[in-house]
Image (tube, rainbow, N blue to C red):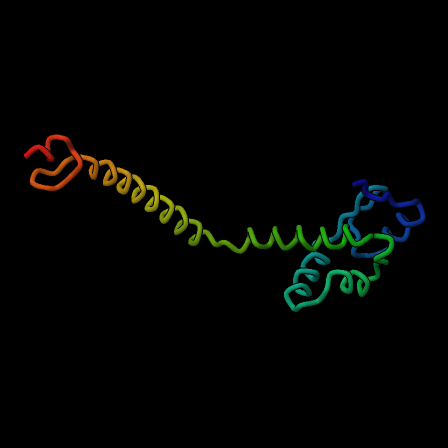
Length: 129
């Protein structure tokens, strides 16, 4: 899948928008303020395409894939940032606890194969009594 390149005229139009940080023939970068406003709009249920249109961008020039990919990248970035340091410590602690419990469970599984005297196990020695 090839990405459509911007023409010189489209580059001039995109550069004229105050929300554009950088534009070349193959990519566009938006200002941090624009990204913050986009995030708020997405949280309020606005569609990315409508937001870009309201901010002065022509969706036909940018294309749907650039618009929706920009919104998706922003959402993934914000999702990573929402984990607080305390939560990450909790996750590490719980992961260590899970590893410990799995090791204990595996040890108990191995013990269940040993014959217990007086039981009706399948061990040859146990069945001869």
